[in-house]
Amino acid sequence: MDRRLFLAVILTVIVIVITPILFPSTPLPVPGDSARADTGIVAGSAAGNAAVTSRPETTRSLGTASLVHPVEAGGRSATAYEVRDSVGVSGNHMTVWYGASGAVPLRVALHDYGSRGGDKATAPVILTSGPRQPLLQYALALPDTTVELVNQVFTHPERDTARTSSVSYSAVVGKHDVRVAYSDPTTDADRYLVHVVVEVSNAPNGSAMSIQLPRTLVSAEPDTVDDIRHLAFAYFVKGDKVRNVEFGKLDSGETKAVAGPMEWAGVRNKYFLVAVISPDTTIASASFVGAPRVEKLAPDASGALSIPLNDGRAEFDLYLGPQEYERLRSLGYQLSEVNQYASWLHAVVQPFAAIVTRVLLWMKHVSGLSYGWVIIIFGVAVRLLLWPLNQSAMRSSIRMQRIQPQLSEVQKKYKGDPKKQQEMLMKIYQSHGMTPFSPMMGCLPMLLPMPILFALYFVFLNTIEFRGVPFLWMHDISAMDPYYITPLVMGISMFALSWIGLRGTPPSAQTRMMSYMMPVVMTFMFLRFAAGLNLYYAVQNLAALPQQWLLSKERAIANPQNSAGSGGGSSGKSRSSGRG
Image (cartoon, rainbow, N blue to C red; front, side):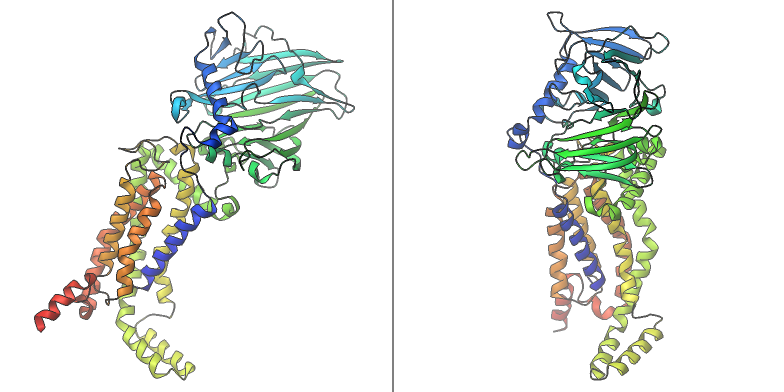
């Protein structure tokens, strides 16, 4: 193992060790985990799921959607929040429940995504703000007063047969007739969008619609603590970039005010998003307020948006769904940037993460293969693309080994004359077609895969496309390998690369120790990492073995004097004893 490989290994270790320290992930909690029990969030999720599946329901056909009235055994309408006269609109991909008190969305069931872990494993993901809490709340902000619409009971008239997927509510609030109408998307591309129209009669100038964002999003993940740590407000101010305000970064009672115009703002957790999108009427302002901690966690916070009423009217869209990269990207408004990997290192990591994500999704779309095979093909492709650079780097290493005795002799001879020493070293480099920078350039091919490896760490931990994806014996490539097979293969293949790399190199106790210890250290470090990341790294190592073997043979031919001492030193000992 030469200095270049030693440097590459050290840098890899730094990347892998520092990343979990700076951006920690928590081990999967057991059923008795105190953080899960004390926050009450898991209980809320279970209650929400039960409301979808256990209550008797009456349904009538509505063409592209269906109207669902949860009815208890006694015949009284109810929802998980005990809001009377609730209405659910169910499509192919989601069901949205609305409540007459406040004319607000109550909760959303995402049919294409299942809750993970425990008794929630067979239920759909429920986007909810908790028991007896609506997902959003509205207020009418007039110049002289603010009226909370959650205290107003709206009437729900018969649906318009021309718009079977629409729901509308109306109420008289003081001197104003208020109407709130919801309509489901008409195309599959907009499957998680709900269009909202608010009309207020006799609204004076300066009136606005205030929208209270969800105080939290109940976790549907087995690692609830990790999901809580991902909770954040996100918003996009025109002309700026997407910004996040993490719940955990807001002290209790601390207020962060944001001036518009904003095109969207919302709440996200690790995989899902509830956002208000208003590119036309725009969001004039927003404020975010921290809440008290629960065992050092921030499971909830308050956020409110203000949308001006133009001639008593405001229109906006609600995105109620997963953070699918391509879907959010197709919607525009930089929504695909909502989940900002790596926190304060986002600006460095995100470009690589975006490229890696788009390449993997493209490969999946073109090939039709499972993501496991896509990762394998991707790993081999990266190694093949770097083959010429690695070839050049390793041959440069061979040349460096050949001239190293001359360099050492010059350094020793002209130790007291730095200028003469530099002159003579340059002559040696030039005579062999090299420069003093050749050793550094030789490290480049080994360093190039590291940004990809760094990006993949966050991609597998935070990208919903890999959530719950099985491959071979692995039930979820975004979680740890349950049988530790991929990290073990990664470690063994790394040891094989190091062992082959020692062939034809000068024997050294230090390099031999590194060759034996680093694979062991890396294996233990990778044990709890995402199975997909281990799979990628193992494939990279296996794909590099043929090139390493060929180059080791070249090195042995170029440096026959070292061949006897390579391979851990056993060959050298046997030959020495034979000569004796």
